[in-house]
Image 1 (spheres, one colour):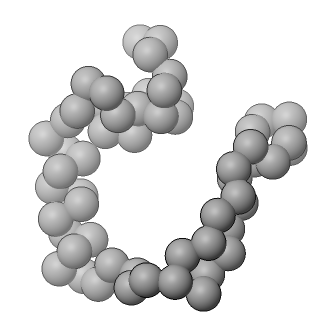
Image 2: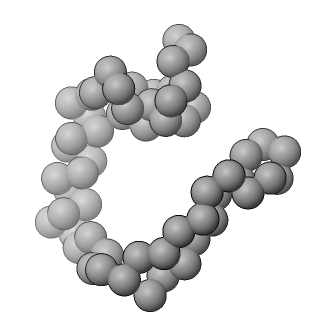
Amino acid sequence: MITFSMTNEDGITVLEGQTGDLVPGMKEREALVRMLAEGDPTNGAANGAAGAGNDQP
């Protein structure tokens, strides 16, 4: 089980989670990189924004 947390720029924890499934291997990572490169207007990580949900140009 992997436990993780994300913090904002003020150091406040905004997300905590756990995963017990498989971590992506190289083949899956390559597919994810390809998907991000193709872009997704609803995904801040895909369109180069500072974070998901950030709709600022």
